[in-house]
Picture 1: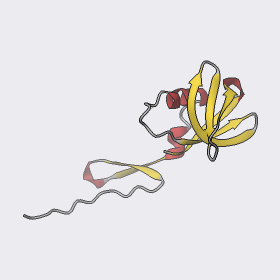
Picture 2 (picture 1 turned 90 degrees about the horizontal axis):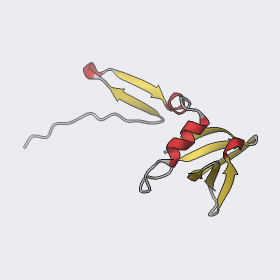
Picture 3 (picture 1 turned 135 degrees about the vertical axis):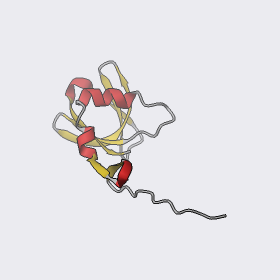
Length: 104
């Protein structure tokens, strides 16, 4: 049996899209995550299936920077599990200024 070597792309910090003729288009992750408003991004994060891992995000609420995972969204409340905490904290949606996804 002859084994054929296949070149697979190595992705570090950026997304790579392969087109025919071996051309690469690099998309910066920052551009993708800022194409949504904070409310739209929270809505998308809250609709993730239960078996999917929750991404670590940076939330800016009342000029305070918070790191954590969005556990759920109910009406006008956000429930965020902070990065090193075991407790879920409730925040109001109108206090949210921005959301950035840091780690998938």
